[in-house]
Length: 110
Length: 111
Image (cartoon, rainbow over all chains, first blue to last red; front, side):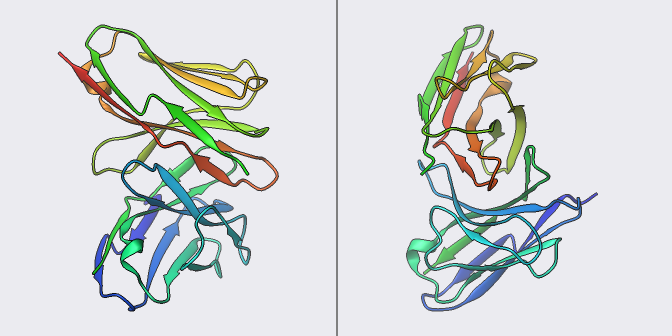
């Protein structure tokens, strides 16, 4: 089992560029999450999904969009990247108990 | 809105000593989680606490939950260097599964 896989693992973007982060899980989990982790701030919830075709906003949704067209995939999009979006992004999935996390994507916006 | 507060944020311990990390949350919750993160790594689940009075133990770590006080504790017994990591608590509500994290406690265990 691969668990939760995030691609890419590293990325450098220029301000104003767009990109999509992919999260894939092979555990048939209903719930999926996108978090960002910044020093001293723990993990902050960007968006989450409670099932295929559904998404909801978390604590810090501005500047991000998500889609869950297939149960196993949860995509995070940045339409116009800003330096404030420099962070480590974690995807997670769960079946209503503990969450399983991907290895993270380190994104730098210059 | 659900808020989660941990303290302390930084903890330096001597090997062999005991200490407790505290996690407070602001609204009624169904589930409380503890995770561990090593530097540069992902998060690993330690405990899931589902009911008032729940206590779980794994090795030198013991977690408990008091839903009336909206408080969870992570107790470390006879700390060893391998426990050095950042520990996060997280809280979720059953109706929407929105899971929110505390800021984390960076634990350093010194010989």
